[in-house]
Length: 379
Image 1: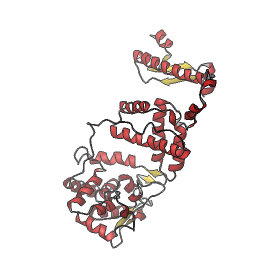
Image 2: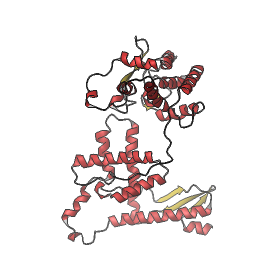
Image 3: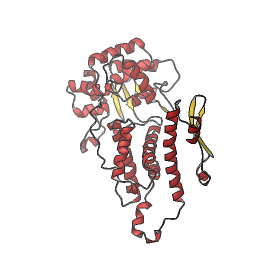
Image 4: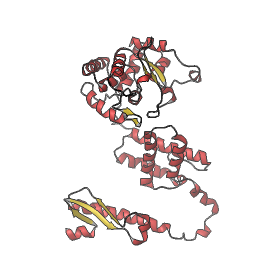
C-alpha cells in the first residue's frame, strides 16, 4: 500500500493520510508555496487513494485552465468584434464588490458575510466569470449543487435571491446589455420543510413562570421577547437607555445601532411593555453591572451575537415547548394573540414592525403609544 499511496500523492503520518504534491514549475507564480500538503481527513488507505485520485483530476483540470490562459487564442482575428461585448461585463466577484460598496454602507457583518459567501458558492462551482457568461442551465446546476450540499429549498432560495440582487445591481449600474441567468430558476417544492410553529398561550405562561424562577440574563431576554414579539437580534442589541420603564406608558424605543442594524425601515418602532416583558425590563436595568447594554452577554460595541444567543436560548426553551417551536415562535404567537383580541391588522403590524401594504400607511408618524399599549394590554 505504501507504493500505491506514494504514486497517488498520499502520505501517511500520525495515523492520518495527507495529500502531498509539488506545484508544477510553470505554475509556481500562481501559488505562495512550492508544495501542496493537506489532510485527507481519513485513516483508511483505500479511502485516501480514492480521494487523492479525485483531487489529482481536479488539479489537472485547474492547471490546464491556467496554462490555456497564457496561450494565444487560435484564429482570434476572425472573431466578430460585436461578439466580444459579452466578456466586457464584471466578473461575479467584482459584481459582489460593487454591491457591497453601494448596498453595504451601514449594514452589519452578517450582510457582508452573506453576500461574500453566496458569491463564493457560485465561483466555486461555475468559476469567477463575467456575469453575462453564465447560462440558465448553469444556474440550474448551481441550484442542484446547493441542494446536494444539504441546503433546504428555503435556504437555496435565499442564496439565489442574494445572487440575483448582486447581478441585477451590476447590470443596472454599469448599463450592461445582458440578462440575469439566476433570475428565473425553478425551485421544487420542499415537502420535508418544517415551518416554525407559534407557541400556545399555555406554554408561553409556563415558560414565563420558569423565567421568573431562574431570574437571570438569559431568562430576562426570553421574557422580554415573549410579550413584545421582538426579533432576537432586536432585543439582544438593546441599550439600557432604549428601555423606558419609568414613563407613564413603559416602552422600548427600538432603533438601529452601529453594532446592530434593523431588518427593515419599518422595524424601527415603539413597543409597549406589559406583564412579563415589563418585569424583565425592570430586572435587567436593576442588574448590578456597569454595562450600557441591556444584554452584555450577547452584545457589545463590536457586534450583536444573535446567532450565539439563539443556540443557547433554544436549547433551554426546547425542554418546555413542542417540537418546531423556537425563540422566533414568540413572534408568530404575538400575531395570533393580537388576532384573538380582534386587534386591527395595521396596529398588529405597527406593534410587530411588519410592513403594512398601501401608500397611505407611509404618511404620518403612525399610531400613538397609548393606542398600541391598549391592544397589547388585552393579550
